Image 1 (cartoon, rainbow, N blue to C red):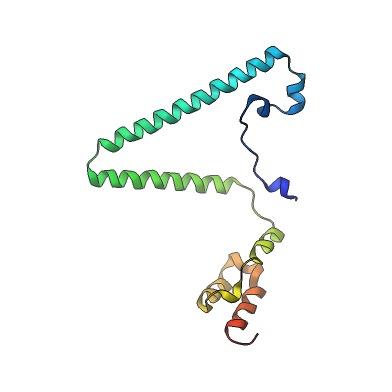
Image 2 (cartoon, rainbow, N blue to C red):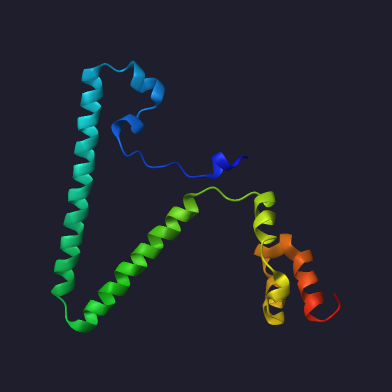
Length: 143
């Protein structure tokens, strides 16, 4: 799998980007104009919904007492975190070779001994066992 397959697709910023190049070339000028207008309407609706959501959130915020305001802010941040976690779970998982490449970037010899011992029992670092052992050997003076 190449780097192109791993990179997430860019969100279309115009009607022409939304349609593939081959399809766009086959459209008449009227069809192109219709698609551009539909895309603009879609973007405007999205902006209006975002604005309404922010205004509704602000009304809820200012209607509350101070302790409830703090809890409201924490609730909003937690919702954002949950959404980020959900979106990251939808992404493709890394292959073992990609994981190895990432794990080789860590300088295990600079990590504290306690951290290396924790990593040696962590399942996420099974591919880096030999690097962790090398880091421990350096820490213990047996390099």
